[in-house]
Each structure stands twice: as structure tokens, then as C-alpha cells.
Amino acid sequence: MLELRKKLANYQEIFYMLFLLPMTGMTSMGLNSEDRIYLYVFAVATLFLLLKMAVTDFTWQEIAIMAVLNAVLSVMNFLRNGEKTLILTVMAIFGAKNVNLDKVMKYALWEKAVLTVGTLTLVATGVIENELVILPKNGDLLEIYCYGYYSANMAFANIFVILLLTVIVYQERLKWYIYVIETMYLNSCIINL
Image (cartoon, rainbow, N blue to C red; front, side, top):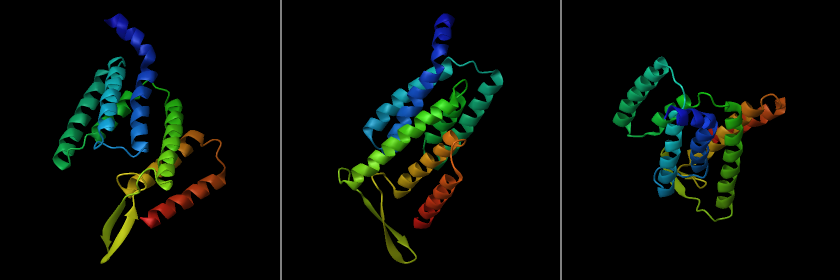
């Protein structure tokens, strides 16, 4: 059994990417836990994360911190809204041990960029319906389009994450005017909300 664990330990980065990239792809395409395909991908991806964590050598202190943090977050989340995403996020952070994060971030950036632009393009061409949400604001009704996502904020959040990943991955090669353009875009997103 230990021999198999040692052999599988050579594939820690692959296991982690088989967890992270499908989950990133699902959210980039505007899918969430209400969609059946998301739940299937979530189940398989979580198995790869658990496999990755099973072949990683953690200290007893790390295991104790993971257990306490997951227990506290589980109680807080289930009392508040029953959402499991934050718990999975904490597990993903601990699962990133022994993984080349620069490589993972680069893959996540390009996957998120392609799938987000693809989703927005499908909405712009009418292939995906652009749902309209009507919200009250200052006594008036405000119409907000969702751009193919389950809320308008998710479209802006995906673009925001793409911009942040761009800065993280390419910070050494970005010119100063890219930061200015990104800041102006982010400010316009915040103002439009």
C-alpha cells in the first residue's frame, strides 16, 4: 500500500489540476450547483482532490489545522446557508502543497479567459439566453442583464478574476499602462453595479 502511495505521489500536480481545472471551467461557463453536469464534475473533481491529499505528506500540525478550520467553517456555513464551496476552497488551499502554483495559475488563467469569453460570445450571438433581473433601487426598478450567468455579478466576478490572474501570472512582463487600463475597467464595473 505504501509503495502505491509513493508511486502516486509523483502525480500530485496532475491530481490537483484534475480537481482545479474542471471546477474553474464549470464556474467560467456560468454553471453552478443547480446544474446536474456541475454536480457530476464536482463529484469527480473532489475525488481527485481527496486522492491528491491522500498522497501528500502532511505534518500532524497541518492535519490538526485543516480539521479545526474545516469544522469551524462547516458549522458557520451550514448555519448560515448550507453552502459547501468555502469548505472545498479551504481543502483546495491545503491540497496545493507540493504543487507548482505558477503553472496551475497559468492554466487556470487561460482556461478561465477562454471559457468566460466563450460564454459572453454565446450570449452576444443569442445562443445562450441573456436573462434579465429586475431589482428595486431607490424606489425605481433597475434592469440588470446576467450575461449568461446566474447573476450579473458573476460575469463581472469572472472578469475580475481573469484580471487578477493576469497580474499574478504575468506581473514581471506587464507594462504600467496595463495596470491603468485594468484599474479603469474594474472601476467601471463597480460603478455599473
